[in-house]
Length: 566
Image 1 (tube, rainbow, N blue to C red):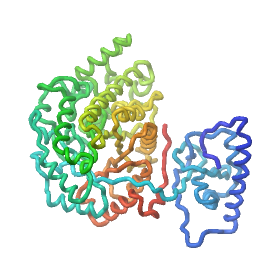
Image 2 (image 1 turned 60 degrees about the horizontal axis):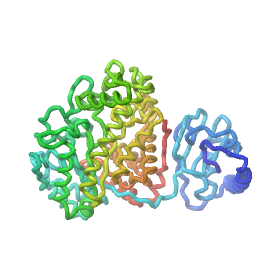
Image 3 (image 1 turned 180 degrees about the vertical axis):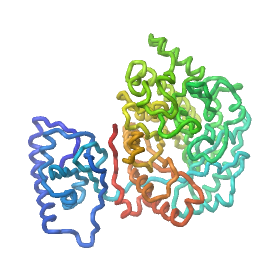
Image 4 (image 1 turned 90 degrees about the vertical axis):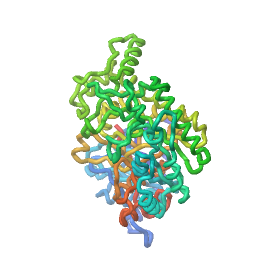
């Protein structure tokens, strides 16, 4: 059985192909005999299949003519007959099929379907694999306002009841934002007492804690139900904020171009280091035991990215705006452009060529042609490199502070809209250079690897839809996730994830569970009373059991589904 992927055959492959052909013929004889005589194991359930829609082919690209000759020739009347042929082979031998209705041709696949491609007249189907023994931990994400702005636990009685429900559901612990704006109200004066009390809720339930070093503000993004600003001595500072092309500041996270700018008597980078050192000292006895991990915030929403799509200016699925018009960014860009002998490249794209927050890439010059030209390549490389350098600096400080006493991680945003467009425009404005034959996520994974950090990714509940809006926006979350999984695997990084939107339905849980074999852990967004309702809580419990390797019959429903990576 041949994998449907581009292959090359040399003259020395003849004996191997001949042997494989004989083996395939023997297996097909068994399958066809079983199909013809209706042989089936008594009492077994029919195999469960997952289709990728009309016009889908299995594999990254069309196979070569020689490979096609070796895999075709099985004439069947329907896709159901094709699947039945696959099911009739010994367990584990066939895991998917590609059926052509125009040719009544059935191709059997020996490896799980991880990619699909556009292929008119064909259908790609994947059969659920046997239960995978791999398990992944499940954490519940705490309410954003679990700790109130005044530094106390919000509704301690109600919170304890919700956590008891999560204990029944089988979670391994919780993730919580440890807000900079709450814990350092004046320079170098720290108060973690509310979080110490909160962490005791985890200790009482024999749980683990993932603490987020939240150096960003809460409020102004999707799902934000609180208003927690940065410390006032930071928030009131001037000249350290991101600016867009209109010169409008964004104060949800300090501009990475101001990492080395002195504010008071410290730079932002020193502030991050001092805060992490204070946290490590406060919880020194619990690092690596109760407190298992610190996720280091490196941008808005705690994600390593630019604030390119703030809700007050942006409508889905606009590509967002570049955020490099503050004085420090402009100075750096000018210096780099001069250094490469092109001082005329010393300014970012202007709005007449790149559009606004809600623009589509085909509406402007830069994301139609400009990004592929020399200036566009130079600018995107500089913009993304500045983001990666910021990640290096902050993760480097975390590594120095925590000294391998616990795990550290960083979060990358799941920007799935325009992923299917050649420009990858929305990713580009956020700082992910994922076009012009660049692999933006492999480059970020390399940065994380340098500092021993794992990578956390969002939107694991999403599927690549075929509705009009998704097609209009070239949305492809599954292809995006597959690329990030590949990048982390290439660098040997632990891969963790979470859902982007609050979901309680089985479809979302099934989709998240489909990534289980790749996951080190999953954090579910988010704890609230709705999740603890009877039906929702039961589905969530089943999900955590599945992620832990249980509910084998339910796991069989989950085929490893990859989508075309463009």
